[in-house]
Image 1 (tube, rainbow, N blue to C red):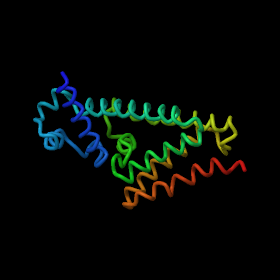
Image 2: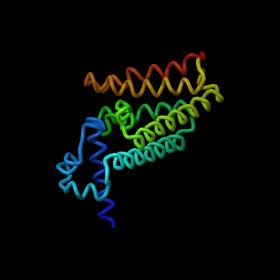
Image 3: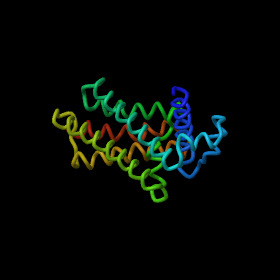
Image 4: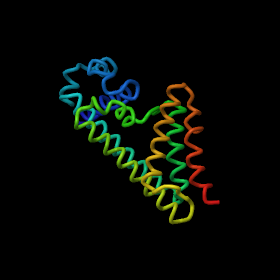
Length: 195
């Protein structure tokens, strides 16, 4: 049973790397097969369809993301530190190329072409991230650490768009430092606007 699980994990890990590199339509089971050295039939045994594979992958990614965000809240009591740690996570991932792009952001670029079961999961990830950002902004506002010029829900969408847009810019221009240059002023704006 353990080898089945590890094969599934290898398939998911490979699919994730391929999606980050080229999107949903940028990979096939043949690519996974060539990368990890198993037959396409073995991949179909674990994940009968590509839509099922990517749905499981997005579910796993969402669980990991939610666990990571919860961990930030446990590690840091201050909402500004939570927000900065979230940004630092992505800055590190982009700089060292360990996770140079959000899987769900990459998939969102192809939203109109995604199978419905994948698209709904991508939307759920964005909604979950927006809810977390909103809760951090609300907590920081209550503690007089943030002063928002818009409703927390709107500010969370601005932050989320800034993070994902900064990922795109860093990738397009081949400059990992661009991520922080774009995102840091967004956090500073929230912190300094009340002084």
